[in-house]
Picture 1 (cartoon, helix red, strand yellow):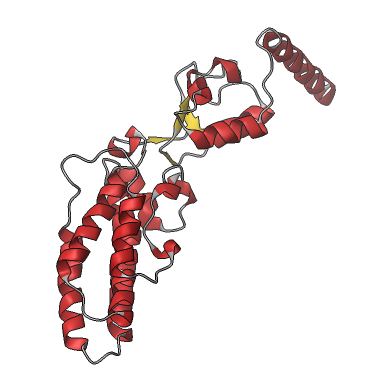
Picture 2: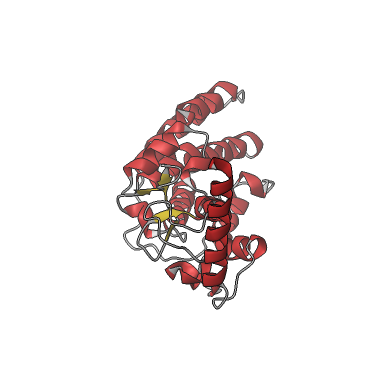
Length: 252
């Protein structure tokens, strides 16, 4: 696991005289991170400024990219992860995916920050790092995750992989947004029910609301040309008729 690899890395590479104090600190720090739980009430807000302020006090000359930031992971579907452990956690659902992110990403960043503080500044107090760790963990659970993260996940009927941001059609089937749009580039019929599909008929057209799903809005508006509702039935029957003509020529 990455947790064990990074923990071993910081212990092996520390070469300062206070090695005994450093090892005692890190053993306790790791135990604390492994048993840490999110606060009972976590507001859905950005903790970024608070985290950066705390890291600035502990390690003034740090790189911001080395500070844990989970916001960029919110809209990443599980299939995009190369790590099989992340995909398996997403399949189990019920918050397991967030626990995996904490173990495989959050804890590692904190190890390396504490390692840097010991190397550049010297001995550290555990209380300050416990406070930072709690804020980082709360920031993970306080991000704008979909409810499916904490439920039994659905699988996309097209690619058969776990979904977090599912898009539901009027016939009630759910797909990855990209899988659905890719399918509709070839066929305006539902992959599961074989009923007609139109972009403007999806309940998920709430995309236009600025407060919801910023990334899907930009993606759809940038790559999909909407057809006026009045022309959609005409285009559907025209495309169906063209397909029948092609099939007739092929098999005649």
